[in-house]
Length: 154
Image 1: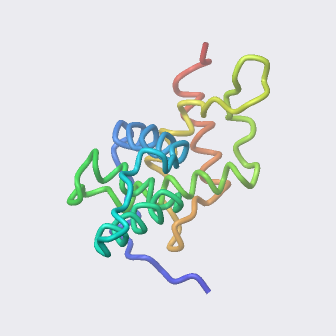
Image 2: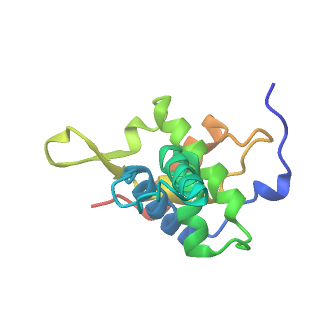
């Protein structure tokens, strides 16, 4: 059973911050390259430990996202936990096919290019459940409201 999270970590956040964090997070997910890590000194145990820690971080998508967002906003950023929960909740909605209508595709329609801007705005403001998930119906309704308020996109 998933544990309940502190509701202070699930609060809505400024949409501009979510968009910036989203860009950082998606870039971090795309960049797991271990080639640019400094080589470990085989005679220095601390160097080998540091290299192993860096490799572990690069292999862990959650840590890559967290570190990228922390580096930009700072460790004391008020919405850091909220962003991380919102980002992964959005990923989960996408993986389960709930956002297919709102995905933008690259030329030719073969790969995902991004989300309709209304999705990112909704992700910043829709309340998460106590288990850090977006309620699907509420989320999709908010996306539709935002699209209706903004008018057709070009």
